[in-house]
Length: 328
Image (cartoon, rainbow, N blue to C red; front, side):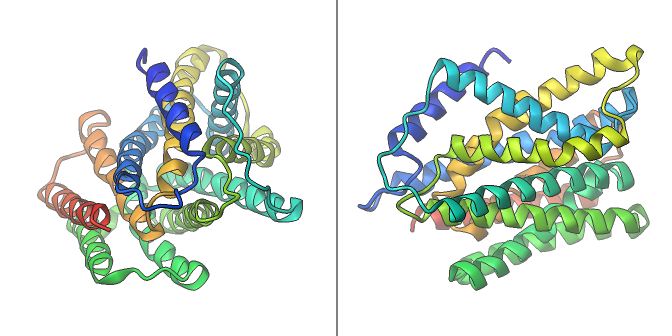
């Protein structure tokens, strides 16, 4: 993981220079840069389900504790990095305290629900199914929310891309047999998708404002609020693994905190500020494709024709939407 420092430095430089606000004049590189940020995020997040499954195998931590340590670890890493390389604050006028508290509190709550419900769904119904259900329902909830709350039009291309993505998810889930889907896993996956939609919509909302939150600031606050909200439930669930499992368990959690959290979330918020909310949701379908590949190669789940076909349809939808977004 020696490359993380260089990547994060470049991200901080990029987002600090732009202050995470879309420029007043049209910038052709903005959507393309946002798509790149989201692609890296989707690939990174695709590893979280497999990492959680490994934690469940080697230790006795539950989903709330895993989510708590992920938030706390990501917060500590980003605070340490910004102490060495401070992020330059923008001179724009800040929004009223009440509005800013509502934004940060909403993102923190959405983040906590999104992560914890997803980890619980992985425990209930497996990595592939939990990821597919969460990210399959995410675009629908996000598109509806963007239309109602942000006034964004999905557009014909976006509609076809979302439909294609959902068709790919249908092939993945239906082709592999509905017997693999646990009822509790369905509910937890939908709850996770709702939390994800809240985070996406709030990230897009602040990206459209002149007083937008810096991606690092938004990420730091969301991790801190998420850790506070999860601390007590994690304590009752069991905050620490057994001593004999502690080293392996925290090694996996350290990976989650560094790569899939401290690196991925600033990239996510920077990308979400540059493209439409529905585009963000569909781009994140890279996550279930990555999760399916890891489920086969790392966790020993069988590779089926439906998995391959569904993944290809998903990738095709993502590629089509990326081309359409780059031409805006």
